[in-house]
Image 1 (cartoon, rainbow, N blue to C red):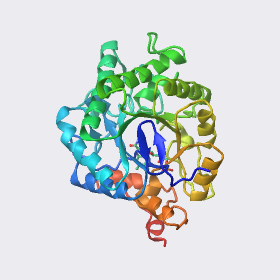
Image 2 (image 1 turned 60 degrees about the horizontal axis):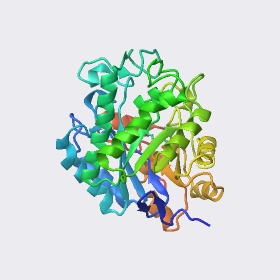
Image 3 (image 1 turned 90 degrees about the vertical axis):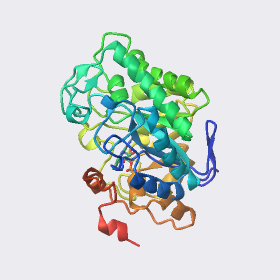
Image 4 (image 1 turned 180 degrees about the vertical axis):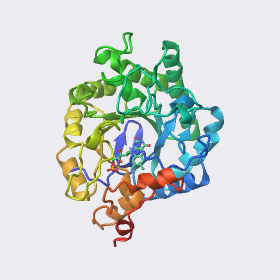
Length: 370
Ligand SMILES: Cc1cc2nc3c(=O)[nH]c(=O)nc-3n(C[C@H](O)[C@H](O)[C@H](O)COP(=O)(O)O)c2cc1C
């Protein structure tokens, strides 16, 4: 039987165990998206905390793709030295390092992207957009595709072991996948094959720029949980096509900021209560793909991870908020202390990230519980 703390292969990488630190914005980047000392020291802690793979937080690939201030950027070659410090900090503790790449598309505000209008696949009104975006021209799509490739090349040159495409949570790739936000009449819209084309070309652009042997991971919504939106059936098809195109691992999440309580970062989760809230989606996707699949969202107890692995429902297990509470939780579990995560999913960590002090567990009681 497979164990959580046995090494696992993800394409060309051998991870020391099956626990992944899911990409988590810390809010510690400089004004232009620079990597800061504070950010490096947080990643050093995470790399030493025992996870097999640490995925560095969402990092914009081009200026107009920034989601908000306090976010890192990989949009220029002069960021490579920044990225090198970041990757080395993670790897010093024995974890593999991946960098998540994102373009926010319409899910940003003009004041955060140099007072320009946010761009999206189509001019669509959606609760996930705080402003009405304008439709991307074909030449702009080509430029963004190249930007993903170049950012991945920089990540590889800096020593990251992989990149992850953020195709979930309502950002640009997800906007292309969804029939609610993609109303295009050209080759990037229409049926699912058309709406998938942008993501497919992002993968190809990365493989061309960073090398076909550089592992590409994808964070994908198992469903947007929106009537008429990207759903589980479509997600299963997309996952199968990604796996056929050599994607190394799919991390299954769900929801967008417009999905109400079914959003990606759900509240009210506790050990034995609402854990693994994308379990149905990950199981369905796993049955359709050859590559390893990771589950994120509400994992709090080692028993749940072991059960999911034993039933073959997922191969890897991603944690975000539990590692803000306790960056060395994987190491603690591995040492034999099986007490569950102290995270109570209050989401106060977002407040500290927005304050500029860096995302941290804001629940004193959870943090100090023995
Ligand atoms: C403060 C904070 C920042 C986050 N930043 C990112 C991010 O940069 N990229 C991403 O894909 N998800 C991000 N997420 C979502 C997490 O990766 C994860 O999908 C979600 O929190 C559910 O997992 P959990 O229950 O282990 O926290 C963030 C979550 C939190 C709480």
